[in-house]
Image 1: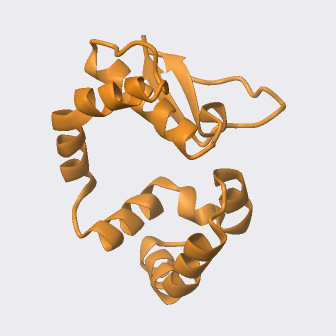
Image 2: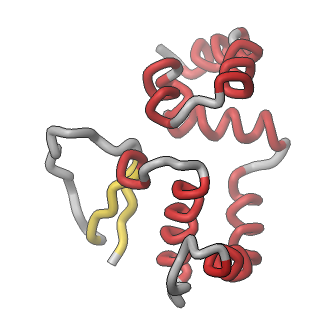
Amino acid sequence: MDDKRLFELLHNTYERQRFYINNETPSITQLQKSWPCLLHGKVLYWNYRRLMCQDLNQLEAGINIKIERMLEFARTKKLVKKIPTDINDQHIELLRVLAKQFKERFEMIFKILPVGSRSCRRSGIFEPMYYICSR
């Protein structure tokens, strides 16, 4: 399916998507079963822009300004033990905190690979939706 048709369908089903997400409050696993397309990169970006009226780059810039403060708050709530000094590690830690806060399993969403990895072997249990390259 081409992008034009994809975004047309997303636009036409937007109210149903939001109704499901807002009223059912599905987990990532439930959302993956009900509306799997919503978890794909370009669809996530489309939804983010539509909901927030800003580009994801603006979100990243805002997070970078406040990430240490957010992690410090998470530390006071015992969601994180130590705040990493490297910005990339801080981003990963923040994703872990958000997963804990929303009662999701980080490993179900992300798989961390060493920098330069070309592939990931399937575990047979589940496949994460996104891969993060880290040291």
